[in-house]
Image (cartoon, rainbow, N blue to C red):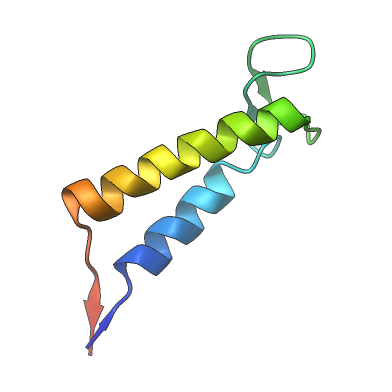
Length: 69
């Protein structure tokens, strides 16, 4: 049995938290910008911290596991 939980969670969070794809925090002109496809260094840092926090919660604190045969 393979545990696909970490792979699925990491992939989904990576796609959703890519700066500029869905939202960018902080934006260039506003605090939050949606769908602008541009990014900055501080935005990459903020999204990396959010990603690390969420992946830690899902994988270590909650312990998400998806088993396949």
